[in-house]
Amino acid sequence: MSLGTTAPAPPRGPPPAPAVAPIRTRLLSSVAKVALTAALVCGAGGPAAVVAPAAAQAVPFVRPPPLQGKPFASSTPYAQSQKLQLGLDKLGKIRACPSTNPGCVSTNPLGSSGSFASPLLIPESSAGEKAVVSLRQAIEKTQSNVDFKVDEDTQYGHYIEAEMDGGVGRDVMEFLVKKDAGVVAYRCMATKVTFVYPFTTAVGDSKGQKQRIAAISQELGWYAPDIQSSMDSADDVN
Image 1 (cartoon, one colour):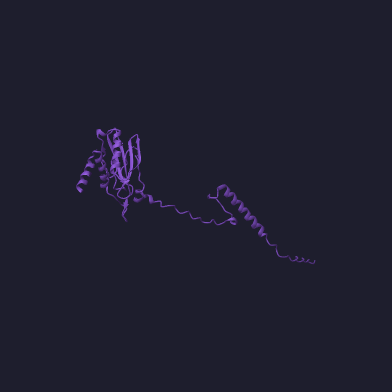
Image 2: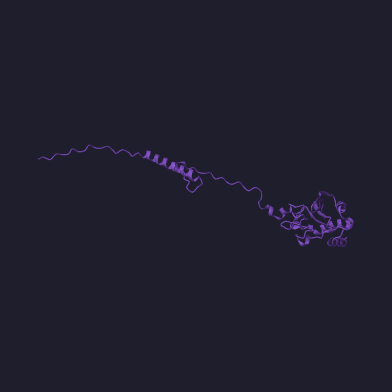
């Protein structure tokens, strides 16, 4: 019995190249769809936000705008001295002297002890509306270049705010005439404060402001204990 021979297999050609490009394209397309879905669901800023590699772009850095002005400038003594609060306070009283205006005198005891002054006592002969008229005339007669800024009746009394020439620039005087109580509360200070470099403490002389009030008191003939002391001191100097 003869053994048959098997014919050799015909030679095969090189295997076909795998379809790499179509698979990669489909993969990137799938990733892009997943990223887009995640961004829409979670939000662009959420923790699950995904950016497709093909669509990733660099976000340019934007420098925040510089701060305008000097945020801490208003806290300096000099800046505070430039913002005078005039008029009656919320309780209807003459304000205390600000700490940045050492030359100020006021009948409000909330300020420093050196700035406190006792009110003027209205005599019976000048009671009522006559007190306001007399005070206004005394201010005009004893002060230079007087400019009445406010002169009006309030529920707390008659309020007068007047500016006049001071040692450096202009000074301001405030009065509250309490007709029923028979007293006049007041505050007197410079509108500009001098600072000596490099110190941040203002320079002022409250004696000059007390003598200003003393001149008005003397013109009126009204009495106040510490004003009388200022008048006596002025006489000793002269």
